Amino acid sequence: MKIQLNNVGFHYSKDTPFEVHALEDINMTFEEDKFYAIIGHTGSGKSTVIQHLNALLKPTEGTIDIGGQIINNKTKNKHLKPIRKKVGMVFQFAEQQLFEETVLKDIIFGPMNYGIPQEEAEQRARGLCNLFGMDESILSKSPFELSGGQMRRVAIMGVLAMEPDVLILDEPTAGLDPRGQQDMMAFFHQLQKNLHITVVLVTHQMNQAAQADYLYVMHHGKVVDQGKPQEIFSKDLTHYDIQLPEITQLQRQFEQQYNTKLPQTALTIEQFKLMYQEWRSRHA
Image 1: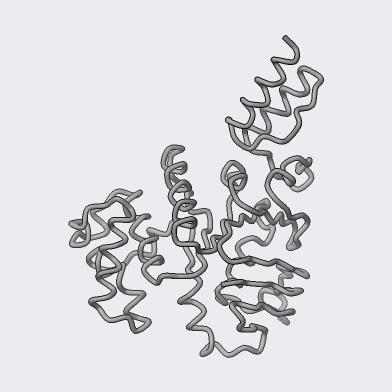
Image 2: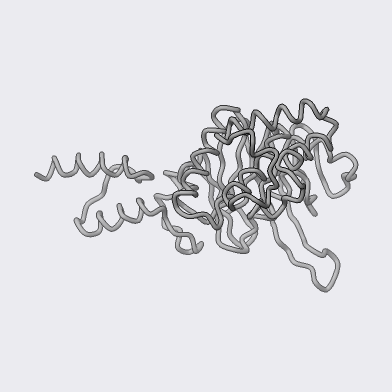
């Protein structure tokens, strides 16, 4: 399902003394079967944008086309329920959204709320256990007996049980250790490839953003740059308070130290190693 934002603006508490202009003239397109990342410093408007992608917020100005349904500031809330079934949202610290007495009940709550029969919803829950590499015995446990990492996975399973066409991830690895972050992101990339869904990631981790298909850079409520990661991270982003991925920083230090320029921007250690080996063979 394709999502397109057309000249979107948004004001919090519009026409009150507390009005805040959060977004201005936002144009973004999220095509089917792609992995996107939205980056920018805190307060740049990233979280406000993604809340428009499943109509949790409606634009103050402009329109949003979500799978052919046009959303504007006059769209009635009663028309938005089908959208929220097809666009799943995983919030920061998703485990805090758990509330049922068993893992199974938490996972099937969403699908059953949208009219999916209980038997089918439970079948989806078992399938997600297999997808996450978790034993089905976990379904009978209280979610609050689980580890923090397991709780987060259960919360994500509840979103995936809706079988969304688009998955929105708002800092999904926040609070996890480096290995946990790496494993979680590897899972999301594999999920996107296997299910052919659209994934939109909001992150402060540039190493994660570097693995997306396409990036949007936000600053003070505006889209200030966009493109493929290699293109974006070949630029100086310090004026947007954005650091480069660690391996790209290493490459810049190497180039400065040896007064050289490698042929392209490295986004992975493997890319840097190959370019370094070629450079070293030429300067042996």
